[in-house]
Structure formats: C-alpha cells, structure tokens
Image 1 (spheres, one colour):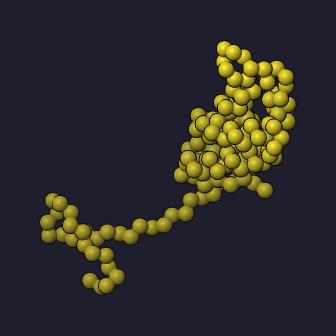
Image 2 (cartoon, helix red, strand yellow):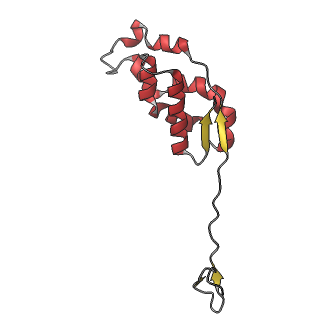
Length: 140
C-alpha cells in the first residue's frame, strides 16, 4: 500500500477483507438560465388601487397585503414563463408559490416603486437556489 492510498475500513460482518473508501468526487451542478419576465405593470397598478388599500376589520389587513403575502398573483406570471426550466429540476408549482410568498418584502417594495422588477426576480432566483439542489441564474 502506498502513502496516498486511503486506510482500509473495517466493516462489521466482513472479516478478512479490506474495504477501501473511495474519495468523494466533486460534482458540478448544471446551471439553468431563467428568462427575464416582463414587468407586470397591470399588477402593480392593481396592488395600488384605492380598493386594494382599504383595511377590512374581518381580515385585519388590506387585500393588497394579503395578495402580496400569498404571492400567488406574481407567482402565476413568473411561473408561466419559468416552468419549462424549473420543472425538469424538480421545482413544482407549490414549491414556486412558497418561494414567491417568502419573497414578499421584495414584492411589496416593487409594488411601492422602491425597487425595480428585476430585483424581485433576482430575489426569486436566490430563494430557489437556497431551497433546491439546482442552480439557477437570471438571464441578461
């Protein structure tokens, strides 16, 4: 045995045979590029209508805030464009809806005009990368 060979491992039930551990191989995950999704300006306007900002006592929040927290309205728009790239990497609609909901601070800031739409998409990509074993990047 040379100096560079790994030490034989002792395996219970396998007497008289040395089992050598194989060194772990580093694997590079393929990176999937997600296309830029056009800004849903109509949704931003809908989030800021006077009706969406009325606070109802029964739900203790505004319809706008409820929609942003749930993330469904934005998720539908982005999922329609990204699903062809996400599904092969095992991302389901439910996974993506959860990612969109957790990106609510960015969605709210976009609706308020504080950040650009691209920043919302970048936040979605970051959250996808954190929650899955796949690697995604936003195009352009």
